[in-house]
Image (cartoon, rainbow, N blue to C red; front, side, top):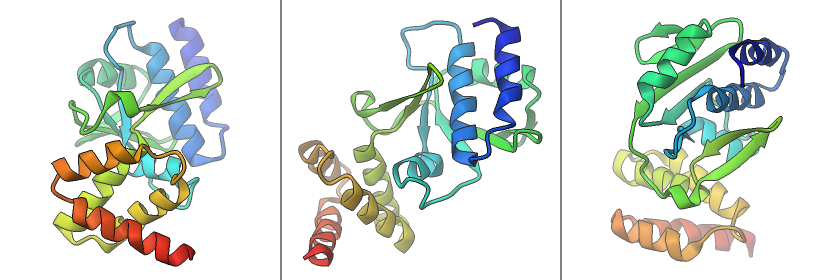
Length: 191
């Protein structure tokens, strides 16, 4: 996609009222702007992924990306008028903040959800790996909210989740007992 076309689409992003859709659309434009590579361009993780999977029940203000192409993405954002503020790139007119906290995905590329927005792709961490992330935060940081979000994700996606993968990942992360406890709590609530 030509740079002029990307900038026009970036201007259109300002008109997208839903903040989640606007943030994801900007990420889709980043995908289009990146030079073609066999490497995955990035993965949306953290709160924005949680907001996506909970259909907006959880809200966040920024986008966390995992990417080995941090400098390339940073150059694109700089060229588009994003201002570097510490760890974040922020565009005031779009009200979009992007951070790239890591270059290695904690999870499986095979589980990534690919979302298409106006013919452009966005890559979001798989729901199983997001559950593992939330259960880990619940266990290691005693974050009750993260435990609740893990339960909500398991309840919302109980028929889509690859439970074998989830259990194996939880065992590897040494959080299987907690995962099972949270899963049992969901089953008790729905009976």
